[in-house]
Image (cartoon, rainbow, N blue to C red):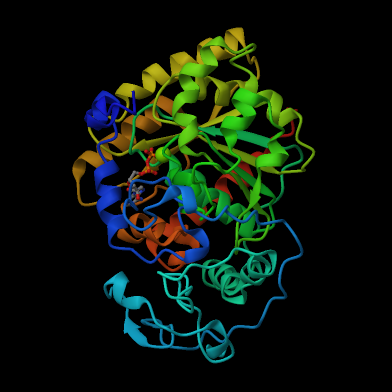
Length: 430
Ligand code: ADP
Ligand code: MG
């Protein structure tokens, strides 16, 4: 469906992806791919810069090795100035932010690391770079990325008082809503990053062929990269397709490549087609506190696989007119899966996203959703915030891209609520 385009042409309220073109436009402004990731993205946002797929270097697998030592930060610089070797004001056009400085030339003790874009510009973008292990490991230990994470925590949680307790049992959470563009991916990515920055071991499984979560976490996901398709169709172990997320300690991701677009059809004839993902997760030896599954905007077999593998469902609901309409179909699907395939499944969390406080409509939708879902709705509401929508263009979550933004602070709060609510539950999680 996606391949012939009809899917994407639908309006969001018809189950299509009305926001995709917006995303694409935003991403076009970026145009700062690092040669190490040549051809990495299957996102149509980069149609031009990797013209010859056949000559692409294989993507490096980033191992979950020891993290680089943390370097102390001086964040006494004025809040509206970011250092990248050149000073520029907040809000400057992203493309101008690229500066030809190597990392070594940025004295960490005097300069803040820029939240974006990641300063990979030491190598010109059109240079062919041999991807060697040495090169990869140098990148993996890139101090500025570790600094970004540390700076995010310092800004979001300066006193260190806020804790996000690790759950007693692993929590597997499907982030689902068959409507496109309601904030599933944004919510999965940002809550995962917030939890990981506060000591939880988190895995994000990208189950959408669009691969937006992979893009947002800067995880290679071009054609040929081992991905969730291999688990679902070929029975590959989850750990074999898992990558560490660069720059965020305790965070891992399973990418989705374009291969996944065919999985919905291919799954139909596969044995135990509804529980392929559950099997893959059960076979994993890694110890995660949270596994977030970013679902595609449909109620097909991919989403059913997510629901069968999960204990919890997190539903992001966009504060707009038809907000609750599609949710009804989702909850009846959840009921079906619960009665036939996974008795433990429950909607644990509802998050209101893209809340625009200037509109009365948002207020009404909030009341409606709170009446319908009661205490499952998080107290915090995620505002519509431009920094949230900019962050993926820089392959970052808003937590590291602009930790002081309202979007980041809200997602931080949301993660804390999720962690605290989980800690209150004493029952079996799996
Ligand atoms: P889904 O995964 O449900 O399709 P996304 O998370 O991709 O939805 O969000 C759709 C679009 O809305 C994206 O372009 C995203 O950047 C943008 N977006 C999501 N949340 C916010 C927010 N709080 N403020 C502004 N833009 C947002
Ligand atoms: Mg998505």
